[in-house]
Length: 285
Ligand SMILES: C[S@@+](CC[C@H](N)C(=O)[O-])C[C@H]1O[C@@H](n2cnc3c(N)ncnc32)[C@H](O)[C@@H]1O
Image (cartoon, rainbow, N blue to C red; front, side, top):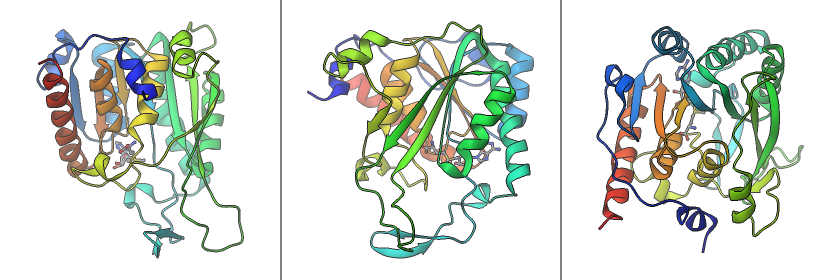
């Protein structure tokens, strides 16, 4: 039995509702999902104006700022690192300014006891951690995602990069954050869950509706979400990408709002969400 099968025994399966519009999210039928196409800085401002502090948990996988002509290995071939214009660096100061601006907006929409998780490589994660401290968030954990089969280092002048970091922080120093300690212990064979998790990068099955260059594994999101939120909570991802956070929310019966600049990734996410909903409904019968 996989760790996720064990978690599933905690919940009875409930029917899922149809797609909602942003206006109807105010009288939400649970659980629901919503995808918003646009720049997260503007959308987060709009959401705060309309709804104030309303989100239980935020997960964000922001641009890593590493698409600047470097090389990497893909399927045994040397290729340029080019994930898209959204991933180009503007230099450390402007990158930090951007990180501070979206983090500030995320902090505003979190409920008083809400938390935020941000993933990244060394290209961005120090700026994220520093901005969180500048905003007086409370850093709760530094989780390391270890990849068992990373691409080789072509330059042979560095150690092979094989990890990404997730920083977990609460809105402020006073927040009483949610942590499902017993559930984490249970899925870890009765021992306390540590902060280093070994998980493979997403395989073909997770990319059956299309590819995203920085797609996260569903297992990583499932574990993060069930650790730090409860069924019926509202989770938001300001850099939705292919919608992995949303898929994990549908699976675990959380409500979800995803914000994404690129219309093609919105389309891809919708396909993934609808497929997950059908799978969940078919489990009822
Ligand atoms: C690192 S990827 C997220 C991948 C995602 N975690 C997944 O599993 O598919 C970052 C995403 O943020 C989007 N993005 C970049 N800047 C943005 C902005 N200012 N507002 C909203 N989305 C943005 C990009 O188009 C990209 O799809």
